[in-house]
Image (cartoon, rainbow, N blue to C red; front, side):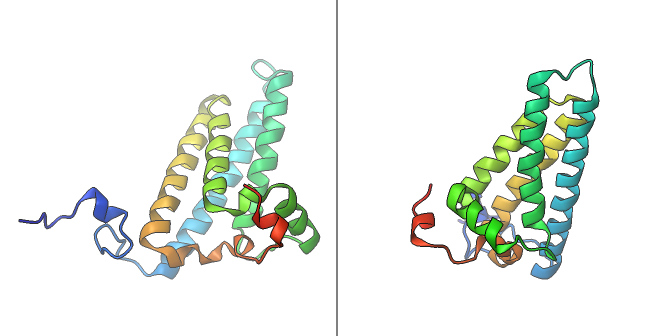
Length: 167
């Protein structure tokens, strides 16, 4: 007798309707996009807040803050649906950081950036948890609602052969 509620395997099966959200894909896509924009923006605020705190933030804290802001800024710009990265910048990013244009590479980068936030106090830790939840939800959407990922227009552009070989 099969389980009418489904199983964990059905949750990650693209053909299974188990675990699908009861909303239109456009609604899901817009909600996730604007939710991620809010999370990334608040992440920058948490980082700057940490960097301005002279009691906890020293030289390495400032360096971590700069790395965090640069990484989150890239994620923020790639998430904004009405902006596009200029072609020259896009080409250089694909050439030097091709892993950001592949699903697994992007997932690992978001996890790395979110783990840095745990060292940035309570507000940073809260933003790290939100960023991790958002990332896990994006993985879920990749399996159950793949058409909601179409707004990642910067990830879908054709690349040169030397860029395709990057990890």
